Image (cartoon, rainbow, N blue to C red; front, side, top):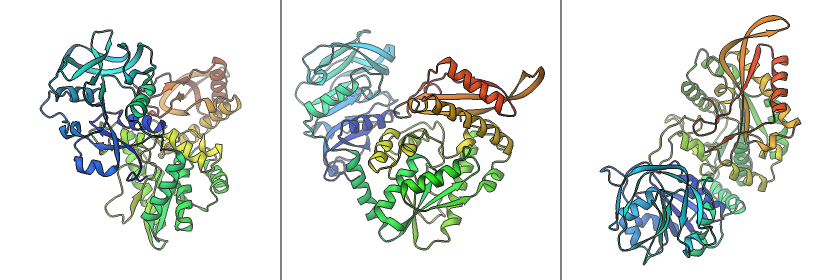
Length: 516
C-alpha cells in the first residue's frame, strides 16, 4: 500500500517483538501505520506523509554503550510523539532525565494509577491493569517532563512533555492484556494528533491491486496456492490485478490433511474463479524428508523443495518474472526476518527469507505486513466464502511440523486419520468457529494400553486447540470434558496404531502454537 498521500503513523522499531503489534493496533483504529528502522534519516522519513511517531519498546538498556539510539532531530519536528517502554526511556534519557536499573522489575500485569485530567488518559478509569515488561525505571524526571501515572511499586508509568505534544508510557498499550490500551492509543491518535480515519480493508485492496499492476506490468506471475486463506487472498488479488497474467499452482507435498487436495481444487476453483494447476510432488518431498527428525531441518528442506518445484513448473511458462506467496508478519517475526530491528529467531518459516540467488524471479508478498485477522477481513471484502476465510491456519510445511520425529507414510496416515476425526467433531459440536487453530500432533512415544483384554504398545496423539487474535499470543481452549472424551474415544477406537490421547494446555508464551 502506498503511503505517499495518506496520513501515516511512523512506528520506529527498536527491536521489540511487539513492534508490529503497535502498527496493527493503529490500523485497527483505521489509521495507516508503517514500521521504519529506528535510525532512519529524517529526510527519508518525512517523504512518507508522517503525521505522528511512535517509538517502540526494545530489549536494550538506554545506558548500554551499544544500545539503539534516538535520532534527536525527531524532537525538533512539529509532530506528536508517543514513546512505549524503551521509547519512554529514550525520550527521558535524551532530555536530562535519569534511567537506572530498578530494584525490582515489572513483568506481566501490573496496576497503575493515573493522575487524571490528562488528554492521554481521557475517559479512562484512574486505576487500570497494564502489561509491563521492563527492568529499568525512571529514577529522575527533568524539568520539561511531568508524571502522568505511577504503578503500585511506586514507579513512574507515564509522562508528558510540558511544552511539546510528546507522551510516553512505561507499559505496553498495544498488548491486549493492557486494560484500555486501545483507548490510550485512540486518545493519542485522535485527541492529540487530530487524525482522520483512512485505513480500511477496501483501501488496502484498492492500493494493493494498483501496486501489483505497476510491479507486474505485462509479465507473468506465479502464485503458490496452499488452500489457506493467506494464499487464497493473494491469488484473488493477483487475479483482480492482472487477470490471466497470474497462474495459481497448488503443490501436493504429501503432507496435507485427509482429502485436502480434493477440497482445495473443488472449493477454491469455484470460489476464486481461476484455474488451479495441481502439481503432485509428494514422492519427491517425502524422499527428501526420509529419516529427518530435526524440526528446523524439516522446514528448510520443505522450503527449498517448494522453490525447486515451482522452478520446474514455471520453466514451462513464458515471460514469468514473479513468484507470489502469502507470507504474514507473524511468520517474519518468528523467523527473525524483520529488517526493522533485531529479533530473535524462534523458528524458521518455509516462506520467509527470499528466493535463492540462482532463481531468476522477484518475490511478491502483498500480505507481508498483515496479521491473520486482517487478512480474513480482506478476504471477506474480496468475496471469498467462509469455508476459505474462516479456515484455521495450516502451516505451509503441513503435517511435517505436526509429526514429531521421523516422517513415514504410516505415521502420515495415522496423523491424517486422527486429525480428520478431531476436525469433524469440532465442526459437529460447533466448536470450530470458536477456535483460532486446532490440530493433532503425533508424538514419537509409544505407550502401553489395553484393548479387548489385549496388551497394546502404540502411538500417542496430542490434541491442540488455542484462541488468539493475531497469532502472537494464544491461550489454550477450554473444552467441555465431554467433547474431549468424545475426541479421545473416537481416535483410539477408529485410528489403527493409536492407544492414547492427551490434550495440550500450554499457552503462547511460553509455548508456540505449533509444536515444531
